Length: 295
Image 1: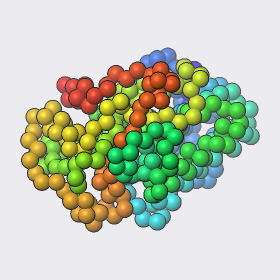
Image 2 (image 1 turned 60 degrees about the horizontal axis):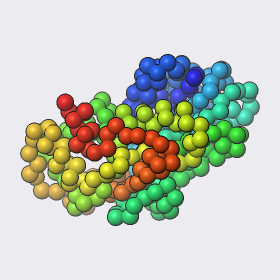
Image 3 (image 1 turned 90 degrees about the horizontal axis):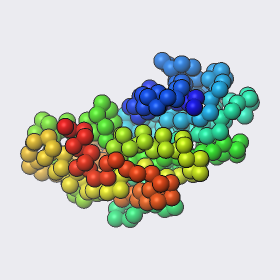
Image 4 (image 1 turned 120 degrees about the vertical axis):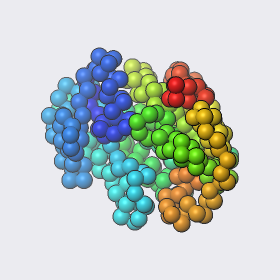
């Protein structure tokens, strides 16, 4: 296939394009800087030549949710970076001849809310009531116009991505490596994670399984509580974990509203992607992922 990736210069995008090329696909990158073709979603600009011969679009573009404090302006940027990028794709697809038949988009388990407690979240679980949920809803909703063009759309609600070289995993490792690791809040919050290799495998699976459409949770089958995640990580790194937990209120003082990203948690089901789409995970348990990530 000839595949166009938006946001292909990020952590997931780099790993994905490498694997897709290894699998024999032709991959081109659409980026605001450093890609094969240029676009500026905030201005509604896109090089229409980027669509020539493209079968599938993999849509990863969007400002990093945890990169900056959530001011009013930053919240608007987080939403608009997702909505405007989808709208720019739609307008370009609508106005110019193309052969695109599939769009696979990133989304997030934040759709259910930053902290869902003990509730098991499935794809039909109700939308959360906080900012992260409304941002994710706008993100997914912005793809409806592309679906209306008759293009198959798959949306992956991605959990905590575990991989070396980027994402959350090096962040989790750092305090433990320096002997200052600690649980956050109660430590009982659920962490729904996925190994980077399985996430990349899901994107490849969606390319070939033409029956897949709609929303799928991209999380490993066995989530675990934050305290257990930290304990297993410390054991794999041969480090002690003895400091008292960091109080949630202290993080709210430092991070503001964005603190919910680390004080909250989600118990998310992978049943749909396994049973309905037939995807098989390489890394079911966190301990298995750690053996691959920390040889």
